[in-house]
Structures are given as structure tokens and as C-alpha cells.
Length: 207
Image 1 (cartoon, rainbow, N blue to C red):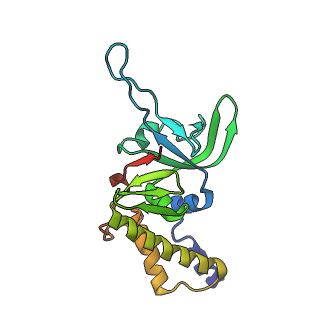
Image 2 (cartoon, helix red, strand yellow; image 1 turned 120 degrees about the vertical axis):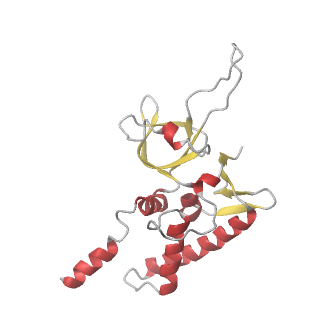
Image 3 (cartoon, rainbow, N blue to C red; image 1 turned 90 degrees about the vertical axis):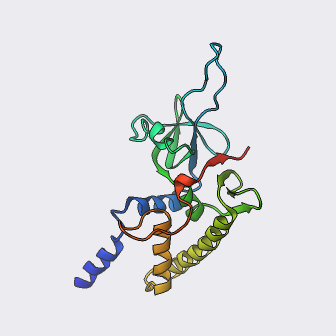
């Protein structure tokens, strides 16, 4: 019984860490991702700035909406306050008067880069392209580091998938801790790495 309790504590280690839970959701729900962006402003007839509410779209450009029953339905402005586009992973979408997203969660661009599909580095253009559709601004040196981090993380996850009951090595534990630091999910007071933070990224859908 004591051993079972110890295992339970180990499995629940990050259960209250919201950012780590979001990483797990991102890994499990991708490619069910939507992009929230401000609409382009156009001059109005009165000479002022136009524009409307934020636009939520999938990778094919289909317009979506967060279901009114969701806690995220009134948080669009909050999610966009950093100035960059916002990204949501979702469990299901239902078509009625509009195509509504149910059970959606906002995730950071870094979570998508680490737990979404593969990404490529656009040399000399300071951006990375995720799954051939989502673009994020990032210094080329940082992008290369992220690609190596992603490869190492994929290798760890593959080993854990092949042997779920196996012990986690010191190197693997250190790698996972680095991932937590990078996404801002480490415990308060932990050292920060000189890596690009989510607020430093400006994401735009490739046109």
C-alpha cells in the first residue's frame, strides 16, 4: 500500500501545475487547433479605423466560435492582450448556427512547437513554420535550439511509451525540467533560461 501511495504521488506530481496540464492537452489534442487573431482594420466611411471582433479560424481558414457555455467565450480580449495571436486546442466542434468549439483551452506557441507537429526553420527570415501552416517569429538561433530540444523530448517520450514502468534517468528528468522552465511552468523562484518567452513571439498564419 505504501508503494502504491508513493506511485500515486509521483503520478500526481504535476497535476496542479496548470501549464504542464496544458502541455499534455496540447500533445493529446493536436492537430485540433484554432487561431484567434484581430481582424485587419480598414478605414470606415467616417474616416476612422474599422475592424471588428477577433476572428477564430482553423488551419483551412474556416471561421469558428467558442461555444457560449465555455468559460473562454468571454476571454478573447484577454487572450489577445499581449498583442500576438492566441491559440486554442479543443476536444470537439459542433455545427449548429455556427461551428462551435467545445472544451477548448488556450495554449502558448511554445507548447505547440514542443508538442504539436514538426516545424521547420525559415533561414534568414526569423520565423518557424509549424505543420506547414502556422508561422511564429523567432530568432534563428533560438529556433535551432528548440528543434534540438524537441528532438530530445520526442526521444524521451518514445522511450516512456515503449516502457511506461521504466525509471526516469537523471538526464531525462533534467530535460523535462528544462521544458518546464522554458514554458514558464517551473516552480516559483526557479531559474529562467535565456529562451524566447511566449510574449516575445508574434504568431501569424502563413498566407
